[in-house]
Image 1 (cartoon, helix red, strand yellow):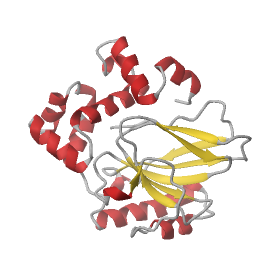
Image 2 (cartoon, rainbow, N blue to C red):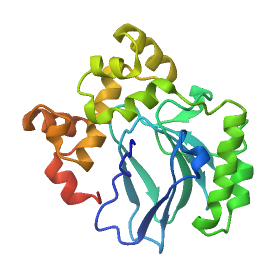
Image 3 (cartoon, helix red, strand yellow):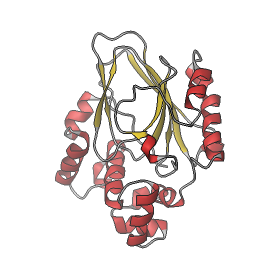
Image 4 (cartoon, one colour):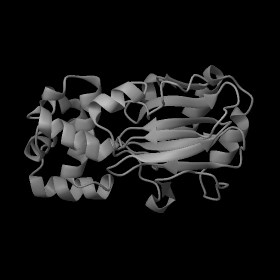
Length: 246
């Protein structure tokens, strides 16, 4: 199962806590995890989150200002997000390809404005306010069930097949074979359902795999790995692993 790493939190950020929780079994085909990112005490300096692309879409809820919420996703390179000195976010990380909502709602940068869209993000955010993270899971699950019922979150058989066979995929042709499509069909389907060209999606998935396992399982050689890693993350692998929690 595809398991993207969390965004880059510097090892020195001792007052920043990130927690993940598995979704209920009935949501497993759509949701990778529920998550919480918060400060446990006020920071001396603004916190910079080094966000990595993972082809996932996140539903984000700001617990310090329950009018602020949003839908977020990155494209093919990292983004540095200034979260300030004191913050508390919770959210849901959706698996690649399952979000069928309005693409215009998706942000690839800091979300700091009140949510004005049609989804029940604000009512969910307010209902969760003041709860411990473990007690928020049922509310987050209910939000996803609502989105599934409205067909805003929908199972994607193509991306599911790719993710299920990720260890054996080395090329776009392998992606097409895993999904039972021709390369041209794969191009059309991925562009429509994820917004990614197959080659770009493959680069992201390779990068995510390389952080959790031997890079030679995803890249042909070390030079290729280092070049691709730095282009996507902004750091060489050695520098990234020394700087951020992994």
